[in-house]
Each structure stands twice: as C-alpha cells, then as structure tokens.
Image (cartoon, rainbow, N blue to C red; front, side, top):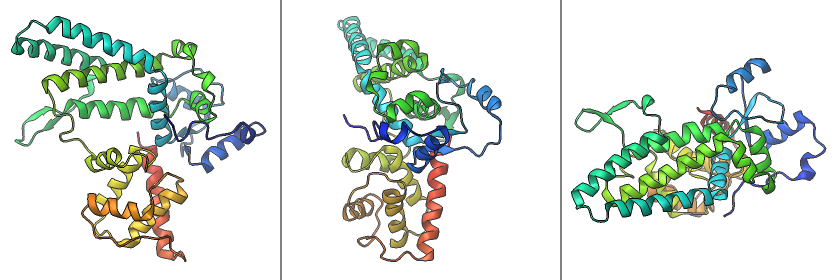
Length: 323
C-alpha cells in the first residue's frame, strides 16, 4: 500500500539543515501547523506531558504540530505496518465466539453477542465522556456507536499522532527500519492504537452478524465518504473530502468561481492529490446536485480569486489545527 507522505522528505534535503530550517521546510510543504501560542517551552512540555501520546522525542520541542492529513496518513501506515498484531487477535476472537455460540439458539446467541459488543465498545471508547443526543422523536439516547468510534479515532488517536514529532519525522523520511518490533514494544500509545483497531474490527464482525447498529446511518460527512469509497485513488484522504464537503455545504451560493478557487487551492497551494478538473466537476455536480460548468485554471488571477484563495487557506489551516 502506498502512502502520500511516507518518504516525502529526502535525506539530501534535511541532512544539512538546522532545526529552524527543518521546521521551515515542513511548513513550506504544508506538513505542520505553527501554533500562535506564546507559552515558553517549559509550559509546552508540561501541557504535552498530559497527552496520551507523550513520548521521549529527540527533536527539540517547538511550537508546532503535524497537520491532520499527515497524522491520518501516518495512522493508516501504522495499522497496516503492524497488521500482523491485529489480524491474529481478531481471527482468534471470531473463532472462539463461533465455538461458544455454535449450539445456541438465535435469540440466546444474539443476547450473548450484545453483551460482548457492549463490553468491547467500553474497552475502546471512554464512555464517561459520551454525551446523550436527541433522536428523531426528541428522546435522549447514546449516539450511534460507530459514529462514536469514528469520533474517538479522530479526536484521540489522529489528533494524538499530530504531537508524535520524532516518529512522524521518521515516517516522513521513509525510515522503515525505525518501525520495528522494539518500537512497538516500547510505545504504549502505539499498542493502544492497535488494541483500538482490534476492538473496532471485532465490533464490526459482531454487528455484521447481528445488526445492533446501522453502521452507516446518521454518520457525518456521508457525501465525503461516498466520494472516497467510489473514487479511490483520486484524492489524498477522507479528511480532504470532508473539507470539500464542509466548504460546499456551508456556502449560501455555489458558483463556478468558488469551485475554481476550491479546486486549484487544494491542488496547487495545499499540494494535495486531486482528480482532473473535468472529473472533479462531474463528481461535485453529481454528489451535491450542482450545475457547474467545466472549470479550468484562470489565466489571470483577479483580486476576487486571490481573496477566495486566501480565505480557503485560512479555513484549511483552521480545519487541520482543530482539536
């Protein structure tokens, strides 16, 4: 499997750079978000020490964190790279569950499965911080649990990885030898990610059999997920498509000029993978029920276009720095 950011920094680029130059290079490549905090280094250390993902890092702690799309890509890499620790446990659980329920009647098997489902869910999601939401009838209930799992992944694990400066840096330089069994054994945050993925797959297995939750029902960003699933390889990440969906859905009037600015900002300024202008136009017209004519790179950039691009730049940075 290929990852956009694995090995995107070459040793020849960074060996001769001092710390500040390295940070400037990361910023130029849209790999990090600089913090506006004025705290001194000591207070930053104290604040970061409270995070789950604090680790002994070799790089000097500076006022930045990695962009969310980098962290998301890094998470996918870690899960795939250490998949042998996931697949074996999931297979073993599924086999033992089948043996325990083989002779049970359907009703009893489902009751046992529900107990297991709830137990595993509470092992991977901190239920103390789950807020109740109103359903379509106005009654308070726990949200769809797969939605809560997605939220846990985004706001705990992906955001946590944004602060793993040394290991993300090794990922960006393509140092595969760094990610060995010793690295796995010495980092509790990584083992927790693997446990989370194991639990998620077990829940999916149980849910596929007994339909406790409609996994795709009521989930946020369904249009982004639809595009990501049906146009694989045309975009960098789901996070990128969520940004596109948010931008389109939050605009009162969508016109061709806005779509031009959005497309070329992501392609040229944010340096993200995008489909052809023709295919992108077809996708958003079909998914968002628009009627935008074919877009193309403006030959001359008007003040209005530059203003739209600058606004998108600010909103992209805010989107990537959200916690």
